[in-house]
Length: 307
Image (cartoon, rainbow, N blue to C red; front, side):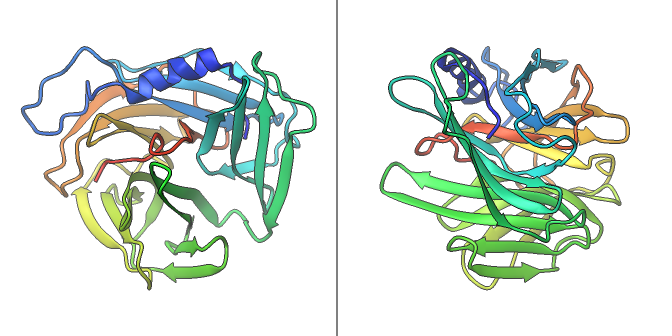
């Protein structure tokens, strides 16, 4: 959707996200390894420029220098909400990039190709309107695309309203289902796990709670909610997650009021027994309207495994 990156840069980011579970303890007595996990972030500036950077799970955590471009890809001040951004290498060189984006109150699917130098290939920019009605009451949106090699895949779209209503679409945008059985005062959520039978999210509430919400792929929409922590998580309006190791999650919590981000290593989700290690405040300022995960969108590479 907004990535301007060479294949060498992609390889460097993949090295951060795919290496071992250095800082995510699968059990309380797990030991650190030498490898370091990380996550890639994408956003759009007030001027409509794409901006991307990475965060490494060192202690304290460090943010890489931001890369700004392509410039002026979207109208100034209109980008408000987005899904994760997938990128895929293409022949002979470059990337195919795509994701969903809310401009004003309209949802679009945005995609383009870059060449081997990281520049947008002329004629490949595509901005397709999905529909209207995506006002400020929508506080979260994500597409879960789960794959098993080239033999199996499934997709679902999720949206959260500030009323606490969770909406899911399957079969494209046709099978719409809703539920209000989420924790009271839910603020935001982030996808942490995908399988054939369910998607799982971490959510925060205004009262400070942190919960997992497991959503079976069956109908009707009936999430299974478990408490992870009962307090101290109320400051985060945005969560971004990435897998770390075979069962862990790297979790970034962003406080929009103070424009700060804090990084956590979260073990395999087990309710209140879930191991969470605070890594500290991330360097830099988080002042853009939203932040999304960016990931390598090839079979199984983008699957999350936190619950």
